[in-house]
Length: 115
Picture (cartoon, rainbow, N blue to C red):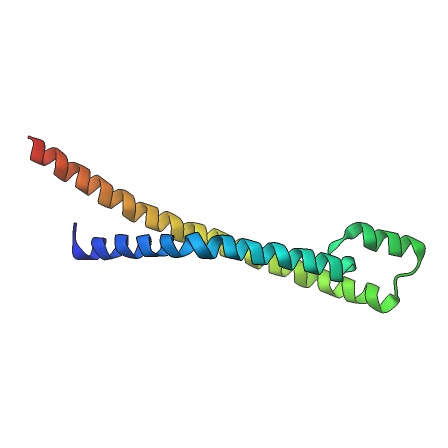
């Protein structure tokens, strides 16, 4: 393997070691955040709560206006997040392409040594 390929593989190994800790930690933080937001701001996260308050007539006009203003922002942020996920998928596929090239070259090198 070339030094550049070895550095790439070592960097990937280090990232995998770090991810074993940070991945589950991030999931835990995300889950706690969702639960806290759901409990503290039910109108923003619980559609049934919003429907109940709207039907009961206890929903303030200012709250309704705020919710109407936040919906387009929330949708835009959703599409930005989807864009980020797709771009990350391209990055992952690029890394996989490098891995496959390294494996293919090593496999061919191993086949050449057998002959």
